[in-house]
Amino acid sequence: MLEPATSAPVLAVFASDKGPGDAERASIMGQTGTYFAKRGASLVCIAENGVIPIPLITAARAAGGNVQIVADTSIVLPPALAGVTMEVLATQPERLARVANLAEAFVALPGSLASASALFGAWAAARAQGRTMPVVMLNRHRAYEVMRGYAADVLSPGLPGYDRAVQFADTIEDLWSRVSRLVSESR
Image (tube, helix red, strand yellow):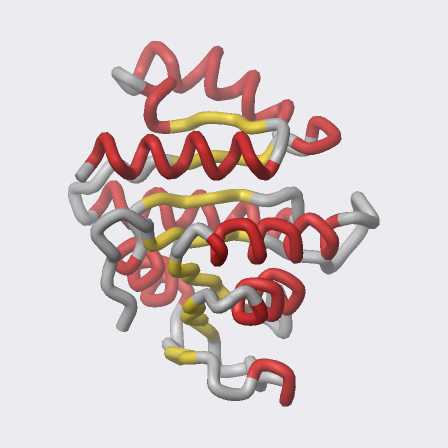
């Protein structure tokens, strides 16, 4: 099990390079994995329905990072991920609750609808556990522009301090800065 370091956070990263969309998603995952691992962050990833964020995991591990996968029963890790800790849970609610329990914050990279759904499922699971988890989304190429509008129009009146709970970043460096600050404030 991942334990939070005194200064570096445990982050659940939601990412996918499957499906239509931005062709550079795998590159973004790799850059993020490397950047976060070099700063000591431990990563938690969800793997479901055959979708594994391999570029994120391999880059983080290559940079010396610690990664844990919470997976469904369909996931078989490729040889490149040998040695990665994987916890298999049968149902999606169990997986989302486990990810929420392990993480100190959620990070969303541009990806598929499945990764966005998993993010919000885990966020809801954290809320059910009585925790308000900070969420930071990498809005590269306006990937989360609709969510940014939703946060301003819908979350703002109903979630006090929403601007501290949900933030958007335009670069990986800004993503790290925001998420590490939010985690430090919540400790």
